[in-house]
Length: 181
Image (cartoon, rainbow, N blue to C red; front, side, top):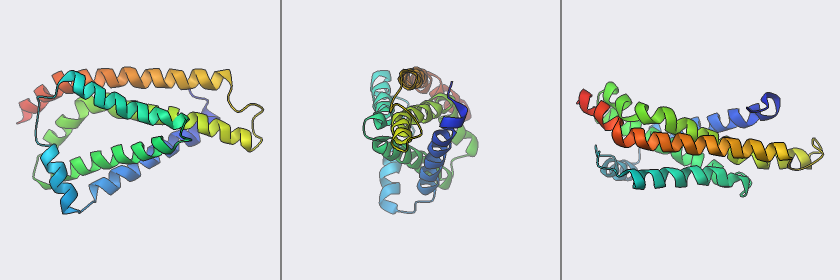
């Protein structure tokens, strides 16, 4: 799918940025942020599919928009999403929530949603990366037809995964979590 030699840097950068965001979120000790996040993250299973899907698609499109913001929107949203997950896990863990329940609240839909966001981020960095290679005289054309096809393929895969994740988050994750409560 991705050309290994040209895109390994993008893949590693995306994973590293997300992990940095997660670690910062996990170790954030700001009481205001924790209070705000605790109020938002109460166990609510009444999220409507359209609202959840819209929120996740907006996040996905902001990742993809990096292709026109030279990676800025991708970078910001990658950090933000990693930070939020880290903060959520930290708050849940520090409030005494069992690890099994934390995993049950994240993993069923997270196995689709997190890769979707990472794939969208890879796509969001793809075009700026190719333009940078051109500016460094490493390519003859700034963007090739193959680059555009690869971007569109990654975008489509991430959108499909987001749709699957939304269905799982609304209909499966709550059932799995209820089994552990």
